[in-house]
Length: 112
Length: 113
Image (cartoon, rainbow over all chains, first blue to last red; front, side, top):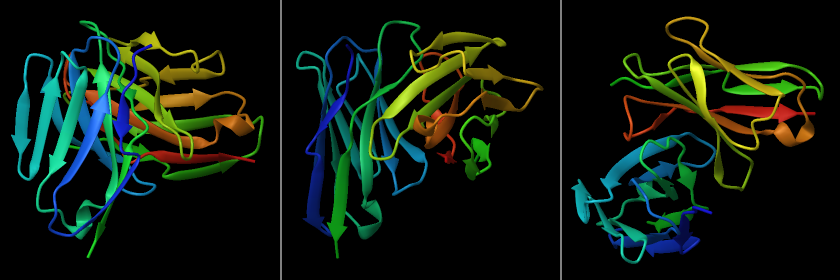
């Protein structure tokens, strides 16, 4: 079944360093989206990348998509303590399909 | 900036009771969704709604669940007879089209005792 899986499951780095999180999925997708969730809070949309795109930037965020490997990565540059959160990739598949399939998430901790 | 809102933020109920979770999607959006997240687990899709009817639902969304858009702004999820395993964070989301970004609300944390 279609599934997004992130790795690593947990990542701890020093403030100012870059953080890279990866997501893999199993079937062809329409789009892939990255969300952030602060502990016990709502999901904040970060970026959407379409299946015909290879890279997108938004501020300190850089997302890549490799459809041949069925994988995506999220890079956060110059990390800040406020970036501490869980990060999820979510995929939708098949033209017209609506549901997002979420991965387990990467728990990112930025140490001051 | 427009956002999805949800009420209540927390709800505690007794097993077997009915609960209604409320959402106000972004005003010009056409597609509405409910997801849930059991503590420590993935976010799971429940149902999508378009043009006043369910367009897709998951296996989780059984006869105990129903959704409604009673007026032009609210979107509700009803659980008729809650079970312990319904305890979770419930998220409403909306999007302006397909395929587009789904914007999520802050969630309702439901605890069934």
